Image (cartoon, rainbow, N blue to C red; front, side, top):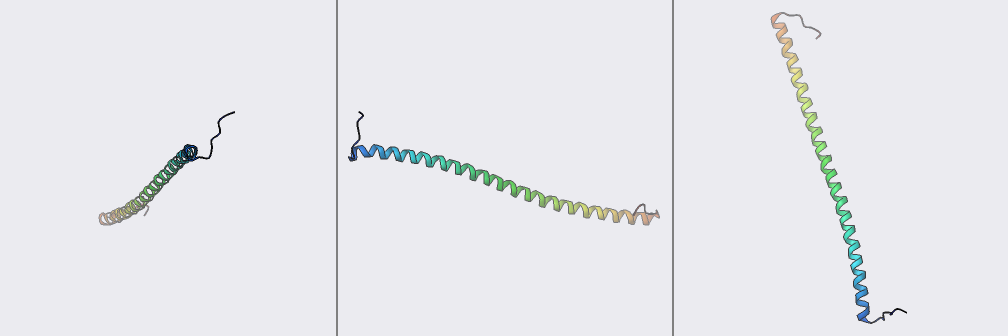
Length: 90
């Protein structure tokens, strides 16, 4: 037969310490997992913000290009009228 631990404080302390150690190890694993998940979510949030910013820049740039294109067309029409050329396809 094996030795059985009694319920004396000297025998309970190592058992309680082992239990605490196991629980701490489990919590460390969970904290690590949560940290990884939150880091991924933060990275995804940063990527979403960057995409939103790029979309806004694209819309702004597209509007500017469209405005400049329209201005160039107007200038071309004025030039065509000034030199007496018939407008083509306008």
